[in-house]
Length: 421
Image 1 (cartoon, rainbow, N blue to C red):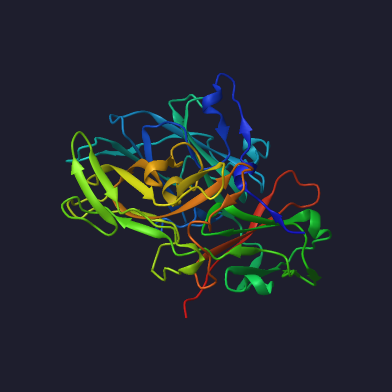
Image 2: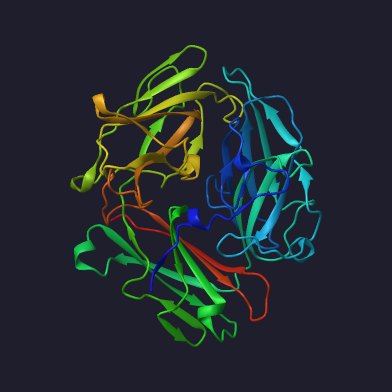
């Protein structure tokens, strides 16, 4: 039976000693302080890619963020091994770390010629101070000084040992009524291990566009063959195709970029985006997007990192609430698809519109609107529509727990994009 895994629900809360309720540690991509902005975490050789690397290889993961308070703070970091569903593995650090268990972020730069002053911090993992020993999910924690109760951000990292190969194909929905609106992911795990009970030993997660809100957990293969597990059940791994992401361009504050209606300066820079209209199922946008990603860029300075300024960006959607109770959100990789007060839209009945101001750094941004009803049902098609033709990327992650083992290993990963005709 298909299990829809909302990794928002998987986020495991732990109240650390001395930490208040407002700063509970969440095993998810999360920012805990309002002065921390533009968190980027990706495989170093491909900007904005999923932060996944091969164990004991030369590959690294880059973490970067801005502190709008400026100055120079002592930010420390550590990593913690997690289960396939992002709960703490609770194994000894000696089991998953070859080196020390924490270090200081030494690399930082100050903003230059910007209205909003900030300090940019950056680090790469693994390094000589922090190096994982085993494959699996890891939570990266950044905190002030040596006090792990003062967490400023957490990010999910993936370390794989590539012990298995994963073959993936994307096909139309098995249901005739969804052939034009859904995409189905079938995959096969090719493994060399002696897997006695795949239902217990193997967990496979499929995700669309690196968005945890879309994740589906697979615990039972459709067919078990010699050295391969096939997952192609008629009811498994069907995703709404959605629509191409909306986007805007704020690389330059001297002229209006794509989807920018106006901008002005007072104590801050303010950008007003063109009011969006719901697409619905009658319209496929057929535009090139970045599958929800964002890229920090500017056309006025010499350095994208330090010379890009911040602006209060006004999003607005011309639509009525689709149900009597619920909330609309604007999401993308820029806010890790997190549904919180910062991404929630206010509704103005007299103008029949949703709106929200979000402080964002100069660059190119993908985004979309989602609706969450009073029962917590996540719907990212009600404002955007859904089409099989939509270009999406799919990630398949395979976890293996050996009989008698105390942790889950990430043993395989595959990333596949739908192909434009």
